[in-house]
Figure 1 (cartoon, one colour):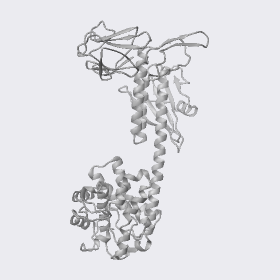
Figure 2 (cartoon, helix red, strand yellow):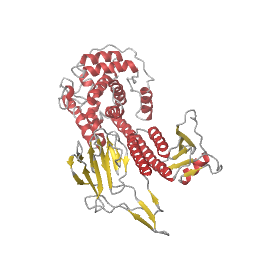
Figure 3 (cartoon, rainbow, N blue to C red):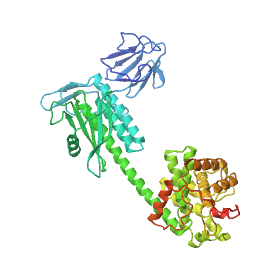
Figure 4 (cartoon, rainbow, N blue to C red):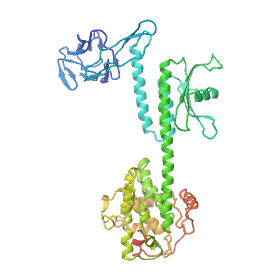
Length: 526
């Protein structure tokens, strides 16, 4: 078989019938190509004495090329690429096979001999009745295979169950020839079968009906139904296949046909349903893992907050501010997720900090010894996160958020764009929260005053462009969390209040007592 992969006839399949097959533009050829760069009779493929195939160039204008080299005559192997003119074809030994019944239960298969150790391998077929696999059937199977391969790639990239369901239904319609269908899933809470996706290819017939009893029967029995409704033999043909999963999310694909579905179509829909089930199961596990991971992060943050009065709510606010800035930068998807996760964990190094040092937030100044201990928390945070493989992308948020734009920060003294973007974003958010948060020895500045202070230290501590983008984002969304959690408890109430804050319920900007930007700012933002 020849599969055209490039040229005017791209996508076509040609069977190699008989002992010799000629290929060219002229109508008398066995295979006629619509390629003006191909000669009238360009090349010929001949079955040789050992039942293999030999490629012959027929004195063509442009020559006959095999796997990038020009040949006059050469033997073909499975998977070889033939190029003539502007047309490229792949030679495949999966050609039409005649299967003859030998009476009773015995079957005799007339197939290609096995290739040598460098070639392909034998394909053992089950015992079947006499049948000739036609070109149309091979083409149909090939097209279904391409579609299933494409579905695999779509499901692998799907970010949620809705994308999985939509792609599954589209694929089921395509492989079966059905005109409309619905995908139903069982509600884990009520046990009811609910439609989650529907599609109709017939204009004006958008409504898609389904039998709840049939859907439940297929779901419960895991057996595919192919035919009319059991209670109404005269009803239109239906194909209903179970979606097998390892989670509580399960259901059926329910299709309406304008003609009876054949077995190959039913098999193809079952294959689609199995892929959907695997994807839904993986998605469920991913959601469960993310919930568990989120709970773990909350527990870590609460541990930090329990050791440091000031840190209560600080990590949540920094995460909130970092998300605003990242969105204004145009980050989305996994990039946005990494920024918000890194912001939440930026102070994780404080877990190993002595309690006596953490009390510095109750004093206006640090001793030199305390300051040196404080400066260790970024590197300590990097070591903690470094032990968790899937958190490696957020390590810079913990390790480098105290690096200054002008190079005067710590722990490494890097500057400018040497500092990773995630750390530069968190630095802006961390500094802004430090400026606008109440402390026992100093009232926090108002939000507007905080903006002006950010501008004063832009180019020194912070990247100027990010400062302006943050202020723009703050005014655009006006979702600033509360500045003080001094009266909050380190328990579920903190989480609840923070969630309310992040929902933007507290957006007031009351005036703060005026204060100068003094040398305590450096200690405030440690």
